[in-house]
Length: 426
Image (cartoon, rainbow, N blue to C red; front, side, top):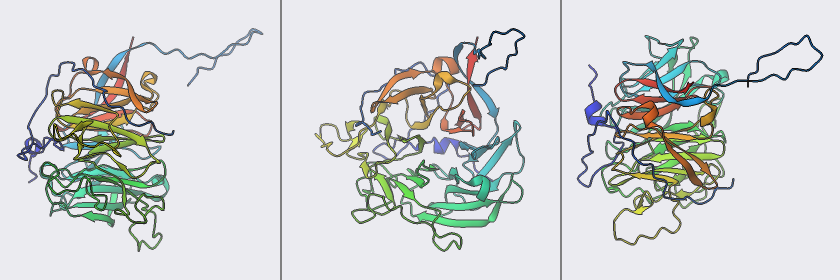
């Protein structure tokens, strides 16, 4: 029988105290906290119209009328799932794929959750605390090759990344096609990261935490020679068609010629639970420990960045009064204190069409705070910060964001629900 682990997990993901005890907080109602955008990152390089006919000789210009947006709302699209942690969709697909921490991927099709899971690896998954099935990514050519990838904790608690292929039934994966891409020993059960995604460069990115415990106990944060506490970048198409090689190292990875692990793209991360891409920008929600949560934004093309953990927590010295040296560190675009939450849940930049007023805004939340906030990243800084919580209401235990094939944004909660961000119009 599967265990109910909501109270244990409490997604922390989050902020270990110095005694390694993760705070347990449940938010049901959240006042409108102020939004902080105090830290500035270094600058980065970087309609449907009705057709109208006329019987007159005067030309008629097609127009589109959109009623004014009065606010945002959450629309529930699914419930009763076992701790959903992610939503994703292959390009051009009208289904939603929902990852649950117990080791299953479910399909929402035509507004209904299919009874049989798309994939069930619950027998291989250690669903305990912060561990479980944590990530899903579809190959950019999924429509042609049917390949997708999962990030999960095995029965020993170690991280495994596997490739699978869809079966002849598009609603079912073929478990016999499993191909191991990467395995990483985890010294502790927390800070496993969990996000995997293909970047705009076609390479495969993996987020891994610092190994767990508190205070970077295992000393991985400032070590580019380990894959822990890092963002990895791989070429998973290498070795085809015989599959003899799990992956290759992209030739422009920063440590390909030494100085660090060849897989590492960036380091100095504590627990990059959720990251996402928007054009040539990478957004990382890195979970803090004692005082600060942060969102980092950088150019996708810039490798070798050091995000500062454990020298820094957010834009602050992790050890107060230490006079830490921030030279060479990449500081967050925005941060907020633990007076406003406990564990950042990174999101996405809105690129859908249903709410054009949101276009270009990065939406994010917090596991304990439950609020919904956004900002626009412009000229190397987070600008025009907004809090949308008064409009949408606070959710309890926000675990992740996700998108559909059309760029609309979804939110998952530990209690089993999937919500869509929609617009209210007059």
